[in-house]
Length: 453
Image (cartoon, rainbow, N blue to C red; front, side, top):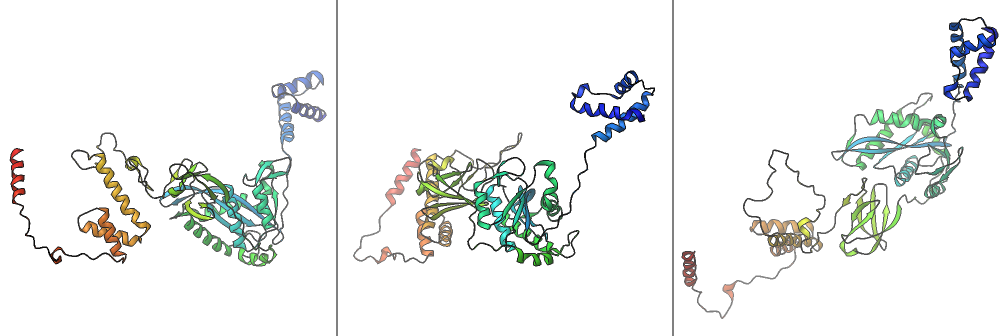
């Protein structure tokens, strides 16, 4: 094969520019060698040579990686990673923000319900405050909250608000190449830190009453990791971070507002629409336009600088949060939405649904409306009276076997310590010497009516 290997290699190299279905096979190479070169070779020998030469041609060039040595305070790495947690009994998909110092390996993590830009900024602010300083440069993996458009090479068009964040804290950004080409440029965050934290601290699935409580648990894990020694390091993370902390840039004197401020009009149902979700506000603002601050975890609604409503930020679209006083319009209670109430489950096929109304004829709508209005009047007492006084008034009214809102109001004011008018007994009225009325005639009348029926 010696005299013919160069010829075979030239033919196979030329095949790289030819259509896939018109490239040399091992048999075609053997045929050409016999006809054109006069070779006296067995086809199996040529097949072995073609297989070996093709493997050499197709083998990608070996890429060597260079070990990195980071100067203290010079560089950090940021990324998001998803995980699941049980929050208030509900399994939720959350996002873990991670900022890791490249030199010491000190990392700060925080959970968010979304990976929106507000959460991205809030993660930076939290990490800078925990670290007590800012690294000179931070590596990113072309995250959408930071990058508006990816250009050629490392050029990026950054989002306007991310430029404000960088300018406020005074750090530079470094973007890795997209895809496999930039996989080894991402450092410890994407390649190891988030996965390591998820495997070692979030297994089994964590449980918490709220995301705030979950973040306290995550902060405790970060403090626990300070005693860990990273492979290739001589001291613990805590010891190396103590030496690196002084090299970080100082925090600015003023904080950075991570919220996005927008204006929203209040609809006829006393709600503002923010990111396709609706949040309730006091009914007095219907038709007006209010200022809304969209934070990472909450929505704050303000009117002329005064906060009028604060809600936990909803994650899914077309959701509604209600926390306003109940409406008093006629017919509003029949099908009106209830704050934080669940609809009763329907009965399964073949089973009768549980009864929610007493047996017998259904009460008239007017009766239901009066009962609903009475409940509203009792609840509205909380505007002027303490909550405990209103509850005491309801308890006192129930003890008297009545649900009249007037009785609840009197007993609530009495519980609140208000001075009520003194009740004068009828027997103490002077000058009234009339005899007691005789009701016998009425008793006879009632008897006649019973006989008539």
